[in-house]
Length: 105
Image (cartoon, rainbow, N blue to C red; front, side):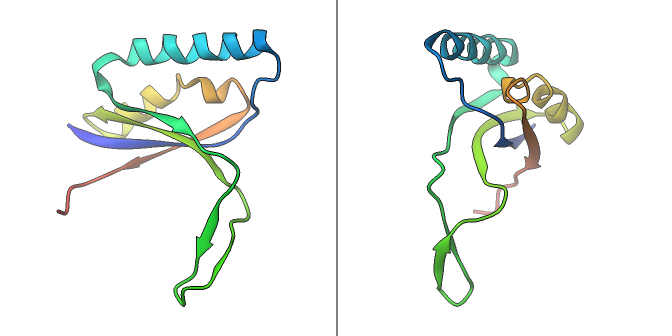
């Protein structure tokens, strides 16, 4: 088993209390379905971000910003991708990129 980061981009935040409750329920349901494969439920990111260049220069991050993450355990990239297909971020118009991690330290 390997760890995979599900990196979320885009999508919209629910605006009303009812929409927020529905979104929370969808996340809780999906995380329950994924079960023990969830290593870290993750969190959303705020839109505030900085980019550090190789020369040390710091600037406001631009372009398509990541909006959150979840870490899951899976037997393969395909298996992790199947898990990611159920992510509620997709219902909000966002996308998911799946990255396999590996231990080096």
